[in-house]
Structure formats: structure tokens, C-alpha cells
Length: 526
Image 1 (spheres, one colour):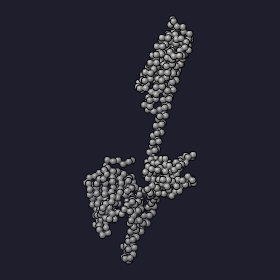
Image 2 (cartoon, rainbow, N blue to C red; image 1 turned 45 degrees about the horizontal axis):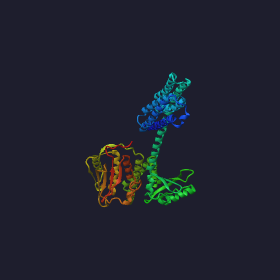
Image 3 (spheres, one colour; image 1 turned 180 degrees about the vertical axis):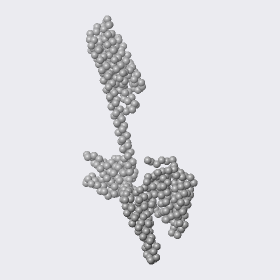
């Protein structure tokens, strides 16, 4: 618990202590002026007793008002104990028959003082009360007009009791404050953990629902509300998704769940529901809605990882015989004894060998891809250098490649990865981005979009049909009989490794792939 919490608890205790002081003052006045005054022996000093009672009754509300204001706690307690001890000493001297009762009531004041003050001040309060008891006894003993029939042991015993009570109450108060502080700290930690758990559940990509026995949705995270399309109306599961409600009812009856996916919400989102009972004595159930698209992508990633490891181990065995077949084909093509029809067959064998080797190279690239090593790259200079190098190996009949856009634009990216991505995109544009009778016209434009440096690889071809765009970056998806379907997938994975994005941007004419890179001042995560 913080200092504010401890101070609040001490001021609360002081308030009740001040209320007790008002009760003491009222009781003293009642003894001196009330109907029960006849039941108490005649005071030895009536005037002193009445003056003390009236003064105490006037001071007690003032100290209570001071306590309500919650200021200067230590001074309030010190002034209060001095007033209590002085009043107790005067009351005992004025009413000797009530000495034991007044001393016992003073015990509470001493204990409360010790609980609210440091040890030395608490013991000082107890010592002050003990000294006052002894001083009053000596005062009575020396008074010529008053007979002292109390034994000397009585004030001494009260003095020892006051010191003992002060010590015990101080230790008790310290232990209570420590326990309260520990409880407050543990409560704060639990509240923080509960908030973190709530945030995690709310931001989970898996939908989570808490459904009671009557089918009403009590709690739901953001993913579940998006999947079900909740508009804030009827919160019954059977209304939001009747198939899911039926699946839950069947699970409650049989105890087994159907593992087939189903579609929920207005957007027909595919989910795989799982159910768990929350309490043994209640019908409340937790419903987990796994997005089938996420499950599919996760399975796809695992498949690709497994495939990469498997292909890496078999690459040597695959590529050696493939190279032998390719070499033998080239030798046969040079032979003069091979007819024209057989030459065509050899060309097919050679092309398929090349295609198979490309597949092996692509899959190996997935298996051995290195982590990104980002560097501050001038995109304008990089693109111009890339275009110059690519033109040296580009046949004239294959098309043209141009660089454009900003002369200087810096980004944070691994140059090797950017080289690979641009190579894939340019090859695709040169191969597919033109009409059958026209050469390809490809350009790499350096620019900025959304506050980030971008590279646009554009062509003047027919573009990509809308039905195909959603599958562009899926592994092994290709519209060409000679393609591997891994080029764009690997390019996007390389961009992701560099905190960049790769997307297709539709244009009125032709196609365009945009690479959005981190700014040069951004930092990659560890």
C-alpha cells in the first residue's frame, strides 16, 4: 500500500479515537452533572471536577473537528494525549472514588496514541500517563485537606500497564499496517494480472464466448464479436448464429463435439468451434472459435517448414541425377543423328529439367533463408544500379526495364533481400506483364506512400484478374505450367523479415506490385 493509503487508514483511526474522546467527556460530565451523580460519592473537589468536565467536553469536539480535516496527524495525536492525561489526572484528584475507572479509560487513549505514532512517541505517551498517575498520588498525599486511602502500588501498577499497553499497541499497529500494505500490494498485483489477462483474451485472434445455461452470451472478446457480427441487439447465441447454438446444445447433450468447420455471421466467416465446461455445477460453457483461415495458414506454414527441411536433406540426391539428365540431353541435342521430332522431345526434357531445378532452388531458399540484416539504403541509387545490371543480361526481344521516381530516398532494408524481391517481381513482369505480340515494358519507380518509402514494379500488360489476386501470395499457386508458385510467396516472406509489406496495387492499365519499406529512422525488432 502506498503512503496515501497508510495516511488514510491512520486518519480513519484517529477519527474513531476522537469520537471515543467525546464519549469520555460526555460520561465525565454525566457523572458530575447528570442524574447518576447521586450514585457516585461526593467529589473531593467538586469545583475542580466540574471545571475539568466542562473543559474536556469543550475540547473533545474541537479535536474531533481537527481530525475530520485530516491535517497534521502527529500533532493531533500529541495534543490529544496531553489533554487526555491532564484531564485524567485532574478528574482522579477531584473524584478519588472514580480513580480506577478513569485510569482504565485512559488505557485506551494510551494504546490508540501508540498505534498512531512512532515507537518513541508512543512510549512517551505511556510514560506521561504513568508519571501523571504517580504525580496525582503524590499531590493527594501532600494535600492537607484530602485523605489518601489508595495504596502506592496502584499508580505504580497503572504506570507499568500504560508502558506495556503502549509497547503492545505499537507492535500491533505496525503489524496491522504491514499486513494491510501487503494485502493492498497483492490486491494491486492481482488487479494488474486480471487486467493483463482480460487484455490478452480481448485481443486474442481466437474468438472466446462465455455462454450461460440459457444460451445468453455473458462475455465475448473482440474476435468473437467480429466473427459473429454482433450489432448490440439480442445477445442469445441461437439468434446470432443458429448453427453454433445447435452445435453447443448437441455438445451439452452428448458431451462430444463435431469437428467440422461451420460458417457464422453475415460475412460467412469459417470457424472451428471448441467447447469447455466452466463449472461442474453450472451449465455455463466457454466457446472457442478458431478461424479456419488462420488454422489453414498455420498448417500451411508447418507444411512449408517441414518441406524445407525435407528438401534440404534430399537436395543433393535430387540435383545430381537432374544435372546428369540435363547434361545428357544437351549432348544428345548436339548429335547430328537425332531427327527433328526427337530434337523437340529433347527440348521438352531440357525445359522440364530446368523447371524442376527451379523448384528445388526455390524450396531450398525457404529452408536456408537467413535473418534480415537491415542497412540504410539509398533506394534511388540501388534501383538504378539494379536496372543497369539487369539490362546486361536482358535480351532485346524480352522487353525493356526502366528506373524512375525520386533520385534519393532512404529506407531500412537488407540489400540482399531487396535484390531477391526485385528480381522475382521484374521476372514476373517481363514474363506475364505484356500482350502476346508486344514486348514487355517494366519500370521500377521510387516514391513515398503513407509516410513510408515505396518501390513500385509496374508493367503495361493486361493486369491480374480480380479472382486471382486473393491467391497471388499463396505458396505453389501459379497460372503458368512452367512456374513453381513460390516466387511471390518467398518475396513476401523476405519483405516480412524486413518489416516491409508487399502487395498488388490495381491500375487502370497494367499491373503493379508495391514494396512499402521501413523509414531509415525506424528500427527493426530484435
